[in-house]
Image (cartoon, rainbow, N blue to C red; front, side):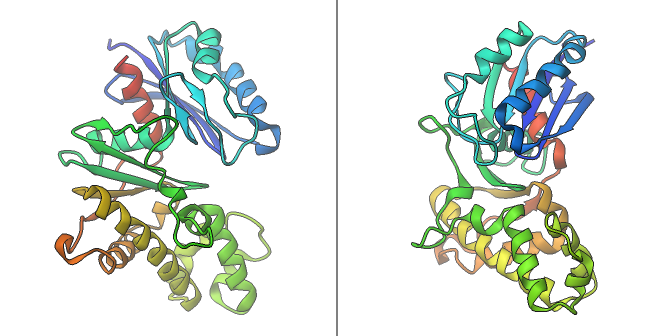
Length: 304
């Protein structure tokens, strides 16, 4: 049997662990919700609880994909923008001590970028730019099958790209939490609309109803999608002008809105790309879905 590796995804809302091979094939998985109020200590406790069962798989190494900027050379966390207590934490050394295994730490979007570029929607193309729309927004650039790394900590932080001089960023406008807020505001302004009826009195996760509202031709949902795509298209035009990728891959939870989001973002981006680069690279939906981050972590572990 092929050697076994462990891939771990540490995000702002979920914790995922998988066992698989170094080619990214997942054989087994574990999953838990993250409680941000418990901070980083709560997530480390969850990891400790999983480790006996995980290590029973007799893995050779562990790859960790972390939701935030990391210093990949030292394996230390720079910060999490969703969960407190991670600042300057030596995650690689801590996990190596807990598991007695070699550990590599990478940013989650970089890991997903590697997976999608080598095994997913960007396979056979270079450069590949990947961005994810989840609780936060991240990005990663893969050139000739290798993650582009700038100076630590972090690179290709697409979510923190400024959209204006007042401080609005891609993440503050386009993340899952930001879209939830915009949906609540729009529903409050049109309480009799389809979207307002779908979300009811919820105070989180409203974006999951966007697809249903779009399918029912709700004008409020259509306007929200257009605004979201315009912000993303503007941000992605800067990526095109700086890196001119062969393809842009859209992942994360909000990518499940599907083809209507992909097509609208691609069309909006083309309106901001300079003529010399027109029409700009295609935008594709991620092929690996929620497995992109952990698949990338497996590949990284297998490369050690």
